[in-house]
Length: 355
Image (cartoon, rainbow, N blue to C red; front, top):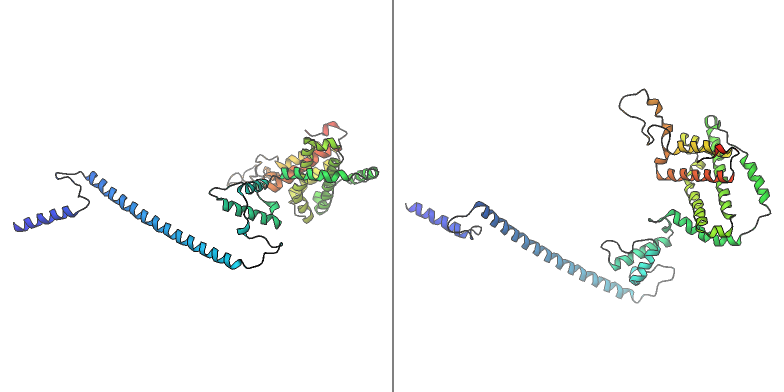
């Protein structure tokens, strides 16, 4: 009996000392209520730990900030007796102190966002300084966010002032016209595609260069009131943009690295453009750009088994305009050259006009 009484007393002491059951009523308590009390205590403990951790991090940040301030003060005091830097050396970041309005104005002139997410005024000035240093080294021309057409339009407006002073050579226009007619008489032979494709590279290169030069000269020979109009500026900017887009094609022609199917289609475009059969030249352009296959995206295998119509989906019918952005640009520029050639050298047969 004494043992039983001692066991009951021990249980009562354990219940009294248990903090989880301290708020427990005298009669009874549900198990869900006990679980709520336990979760509340865990939440309070977690909040206390987070507060302690945040206080520690704050103290550490303050300590590091004080250290950096001390080191900066020491560096400034050590650099103060030195002479001023030469004008050729770039300014350090600490001396690049400009107002926020000036930083916004410079960033907008460069086509950059005036503030990034979470960026302070100091970070914005540092970003502006980095952009200016990149431009000084000559790498600012390839920056992101630039519009090729807008750049070409600005170049046209700048070149107009230079071209106003260059007005000569009118006496030699007839001689040049004869030379151009002689050059256009050298028509590319389509038989070279199978017999000697290497001879096609210089012929295509010279023909496209000549047409591009004629386009540039026709833009320069326009009257001043047309050049200064908005439509005239847009036409000149289109010519400059097309010349820029054709540079990768000229590079491939110089290195003789064009694929055989692309070379064949470009040869047909240039040949029919020279003989003023622009409808056929446009057909070759469409075969080069979007293809005439039932799968214009470039699928050459429609299943795991060999089909009877497998030979109809050949690799020369792939849409090359969808390969990459560079191909799309110079193929589109070929179409612009074709349109210019049709305007300047119209065909004798009206049925050969494209579009």
